[in-house]
Amino acid sequence: MSTELKDALRSRRIPLTHQRLAVYQLLKKSRAHPSAETLHRQLKGRYPSLSLATVYKTLQTFEKLGLISLVNIPHAQARYDGITERHHHAICQSCGCIVDLFDARLDDLPVPAAAAGFKVTSHSVHFRGLCARCSKTSRARRKS
Image (tube, rainbow, N blue to C red; front, side):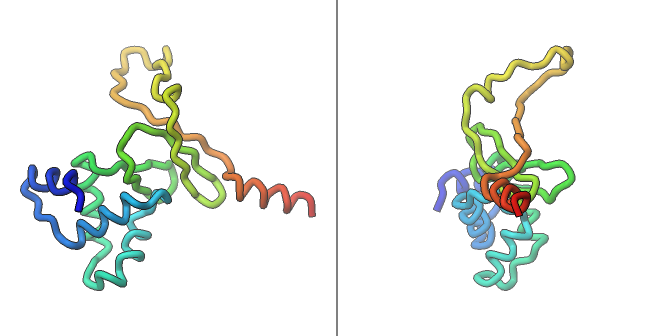
């Protein structure tokens, strides 16, 4: 069991339930950046009483506590990330896969002049395009 999770919940006097622990553990081990619906579907077999609303509320709580982060993709379903260390993402516009990018050069981007007067507290870089699998499939379709 994660001490990070126990300490964060204890500090806010939030009980650690089996369901919260299951959501946390599944999200922390996933690199797929799952949606709440995906997490719910994966846990429903082991926790039949687990509702989708509980999963959403749990994810919101974890995000507020800094235990997870929301990968906010415009015009798409909210996805969640169990990696809390600073990183960025590459997002496939075809299949929706999200790849974690760890690169200090992206962490240290200068604030553009157009943002003068805007107090930037953090930033996240998202590259959009086609993943290797979708790109290969697209090339194969064009050849046929």
